[in-house]
Length: 213
Image (cartoon, rainbow, N blue to C red; front, top):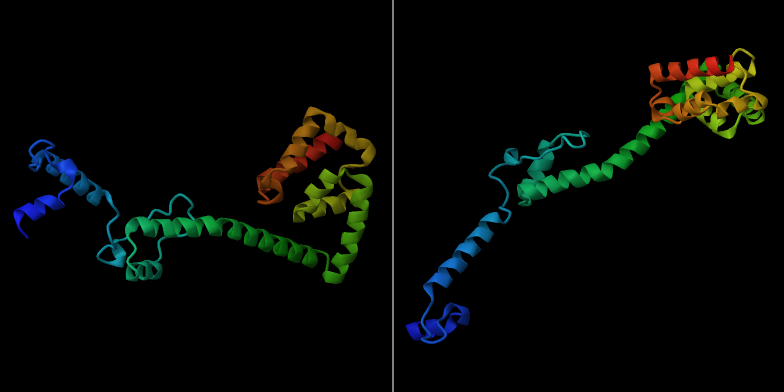
């Protein structure tokens, strides 16, 4: 290719408008900008699967997996793309894990109740009695809170047998007090109905005794 033809291929922005000669400064500047962009662009896969550097500390659900890294390396994912894969997995798994944990906890609580009351048939009978008693004597939010845990069910049974503070409808007006509202708020706390935190449950129980005893 001769020089004249090469000169014709060069974009006008790199030529002097008067002489038509190449403007070396403009060419050099454009080259440096292109080089900068190329260096900032994501690179290819690392040399080995072990060279991936992903951060799983934000969610703590899992750590980098050797087999997953090997598969990503085979298809040529760079480190940024590999991080995206792990982030997406965590994003999708969080609600799934929470749902599974909730179902597992419910099944475990049901198993404990069944064993405590002597079998599935006995639990079926006592659960209906507790539900009927709760609907007659408790506010819906109080009943829901108690019925959401093994400890709450036992407390409800104690109330029905007269062994626990009476939470009858006529007495429930005291929940309008500052102490009552605080107690209601505590019963809605996940530490009470989901985590079954022993210290927190004990605190709620003590609150009932102070309020209704």
